Amino acid sequence: MNILNNKEVGLIMPINRAFIEAASNLAKRMFGFAICSEGNIPFNPDKIACLNIRTLIEQGANIAKDQKYVLGIRFTNFGDLILADLASLDLPNHRDIVHEHGKILKELTVEHDDKFTESYFSPYVYVGGHLRINPAGQLEFFGDSGDFGGNFFGSDSNEVAAFFAAVCELPVAQSVSAGQEKIRKLLEFVKEHKRQKNFYELVIREYLKARLTGQNLAALANMKALDRQHAEGIGFFQALTEEIAGGGEFSGEIFKESLLMLTKKSS
Image 1 (cartoon, helix red, strand yellow):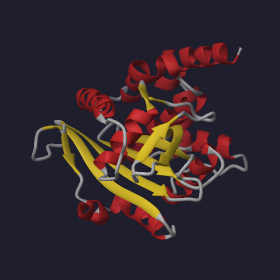
Image 2 (cartoon, rainbow, N blue to C red):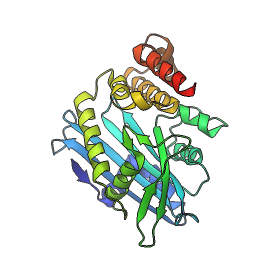
Image 3 (cartoon, rainbow, N blue to C red):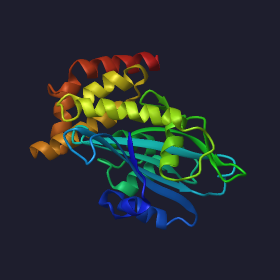
Image 4 (cartoon, rainbow, N blue to C red):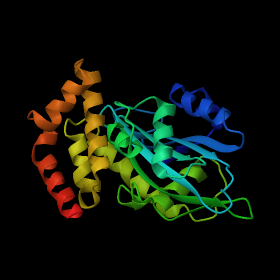
C-alpha cells in the first residue's frame, strides 16, 4: 500500500477545503490529510484504488477523558475514489457529530429535524467510538457508538481510526498495524471491482451483510443514486426510487435480503 501524507498536498486539494475551513473555526484542534492507494505508481486510474483520508479532532473540554468520534466513508463513481473521514467534536452524541459532518461537507440529500434520521439521507456510511488524549499527548481510541455501532467494514472502528490518525501524522498510542491491514484489503477489493455496475451490491455482500444497519444500507443506496445522477444525467430522487422500488439492483435480491436481516435484528 502506498501512502502520501504531506499536509501541504492535502491543503491544496479541492475536496479537502471544507475540512480546512471547519478546522480554522475551532479554537484548538488537530487535523491532517493522507492518501492511501493500492496499485501502480504513478497513478493509473484504471489500475488503482485510491483513498483520501481527512482527520479533524477538536481538542474540547473532555478530550483528556472521553470525546466521541465518528468515521464516515463514501465511495464515488462506483469506487473510483474513496473518501474517508475521522471527525471528533466536543458534542454530546455521535449523531450530533454526524450532523455537523454533513453540514461541513454540504452533502446531505435531505435535511431533517431528527439528527439520527437525517443520517439516512447522507451518502456516508457511519460508525463511531470514543477517544482521549493521554498524559503523553497521544490519542487513544476505545468503545463504540450506540447510534452507529463500531464495525467499520468488518473491522474494529478503533483500529481503523488509529490508523487514519497516524497516517495523518497525529500522535497515536496504540498499534496501527491491524487497521492498516484492513484498509489494504479494502483497497484490494475496490481495485478489483471498481466501476462495475453492481459495485455497491458487491460491497454489501463482502463487508456489510452480516452486520448491516439501516443507515449503512441507506447510505450505499444514496451513493449509487448520486453516481447514476452524475453518469446518466438523471435526477437523484429518480435514480434512488428506481434502485429501491423500481426494478434496480437495490430492489432485487440484496435489498430484500437486507430488509429481512434488519427485521430479524429488531425483533
